[in-house]
Length: 283
Image 1 (spheres, rainbow, N blue to C red):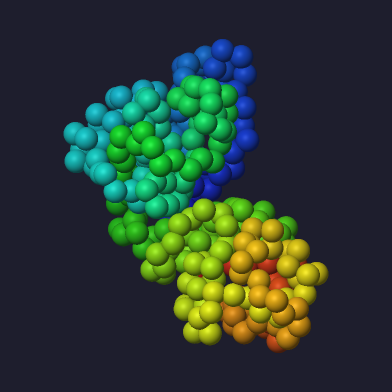
Image 2: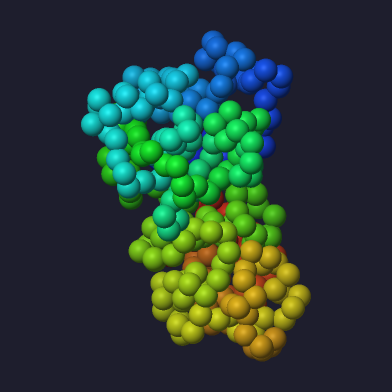
């Protein structure tokens, strides 16, 4: 696992954290500036906890503007994102890029809000966000200073997924990120639809028809993150795509139940996929 993955895993472990009164946060306490807006301190803390603080030019920060200036002076300011970048917004806020979507990025941000209302640059907690507006640019950490020679290929999909056998939003996003790494042109939107299905079929070498066949309704319940449009009308016989995916997972050493034989989705298969993604595997 690369330092990029480690930073993202640390950030993901903080999702759901809420500040106390008057901007009180453990990130501000760590930095030495309690009761202050803490988005930049959150980013710095994540890098520090992952042992990657040296990748940030100038080290830890409490100010977005100071952080932006240092990235620019270091020649590490970009308009196109990479996973692991620090994203900066026009409303004085920053976060960590964990995924890329059409026209924007998926992030984990501290000191923001979960919706579109309120103060996005001085909110109440750590949230996973999808941002397509008000992006000023991206500061790219100097990953070579922490042993990463190629940031693009170093990124796996080690996302710290909860292994619960439910293929929902988080598992879909991790799977879509993996598909994009393998060259698929699709959005990381948390919905496994026809485009994701086609990309999976292409990489597995099965029939490219954008649908999953032969799944009984008892099997479909394990995939709430899948769009209704990917299921065809048949409920028996299994799917060649599912069987092929299960074979890949089983070959990597993870249990899949009988999915590699009957082509039917099961909780055991989804758990295998989640463990496989957590290990940074790709198709």
